[in-house]
Image (cartoon, rainbow, N blue to C red; front, side, top):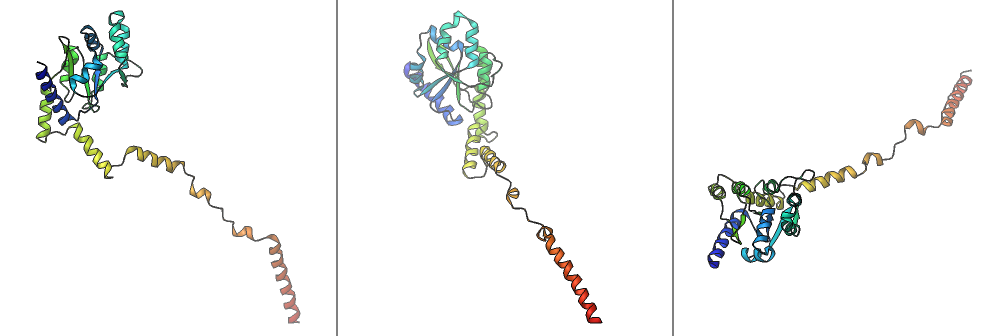
Length: 242
C-alpha cells in the first residue's frame, strides 16, 4: 500500500513540476480545518509532509486564517497553535480580514505564480480550488495525508497549452525572463531608478555663469572722455578754417 502511494505522489508531482513549474521547497498553505484534522489524527506535519512528498516543504498560512482561528475560540485552540508555527505569507487583506477559505483562494489567483499547495478539509474550498488549473490540493483521509490527482480543469488546461491554444503562466514567466536577459524588455525598477537620477541631478543651465551685458562693460568715465574728445575736435577744426 505504501509503495502504491509513493507512485501516485511521484506521478502527480511530476505532472505539476513539468507543466506548472512546481519545485522544492514545496509551499503548502494550510487552513484551520487541515490543522484540526492533523491534530485529531496525531499527524506531525513537519515530519511527515517531507517524507510523503519526498522533498523539502514549507508550511505556510495567512493572517486571515490565524484571525479566524482566534475568533472560533477554545474548540480550535490546538489547531491555532499548529497554524501559529507556520510561516505567515502576506495576503492582500491588510485592513479588513476575510474568511480563511476566501483568503487562500486569493493566494492562488492568476495562475498560482508562487506554486502554492492548498491543504484543507473544507469541501467547498476544495471544489473551488479544483476549478483553478495548476493548484495542487491536499487533504487528510483516515489519518493519512493525500495529494489529490490533477483536476479535470487542470488536465484540460495542459492539453490546451500543448495544442498551442493557450500559454501557461510558467512559460510566460520564462519568456519574460529571457527577454530581460537579452535586453529586449527593461526592468520597471531600472526605469524608476533612471528617472530618479534625472530628477535628482541639478539643472545644468543653472550652473552656467551669467554673461555680463555689453553696456555694463562701458564705464561712465569712458563716455565722458569720448564726449570731451569730440568737443576738442570741433574747436581745432574752427581754428584751421580761420
